[in-house]
Image 1 (spheres, rainbow, N blue to C red):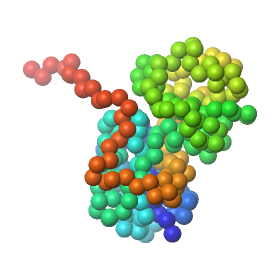
Image 2 (image 1 turned 90 degrees about the vertical axis):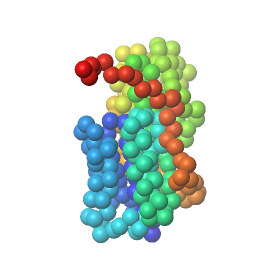
Image 3 (image 1 turned 60 degrees about the vertical axis):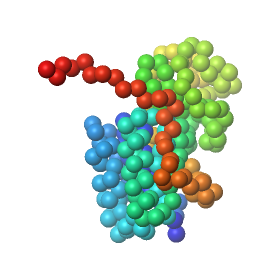
Image 4 (image 1 turned 120 degrees about the vertical axis):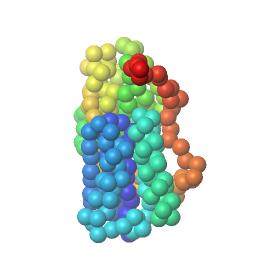
Length: 230
């Protein structure tokens, strides 16, 4: 019997899920301000309690490894590490883009005849973190930061319907005007991590709890506050 805790905090939505034998049995989410820091651990505790379980009844913890929000990823990974270290259970990680691709598949969001899924995580302005996936959820290109222009994804769009999904999808609608372009504006959810998480677990792709770091893709840059303190 496999019980896996799933944690997704890479974007504005903070969500957690609890899976038992390949099915989601509990789910929590919040898009509230600062929800990641204040609600991730309580959400997990609530899910365990409502199913009469403790962390030691779990087989692994799976966390979103990015790309995405620097702060959100840090909260999720820190929480996951603490749980794994305390209960001596494995840590597994799933990419944010993988989660979005499987979200499209599991929620039947693919347009008829879909040729490609292109998950997009907002990276401000017209830049997104993205990669190209097959309709079966297989990643076909490297994850990269991409500035969306009228010439973006022309080869994929020429082949047939393409679904652009994620919190960076809608802002590209006015630029990617090809009739084969379809858009689904949403944040990745912990419940959609299930399939890639199970694959990682079954293949034994466990991460080093002490040294694992999120996949930021770009270095975090701190900016000085414009507010005067005195």
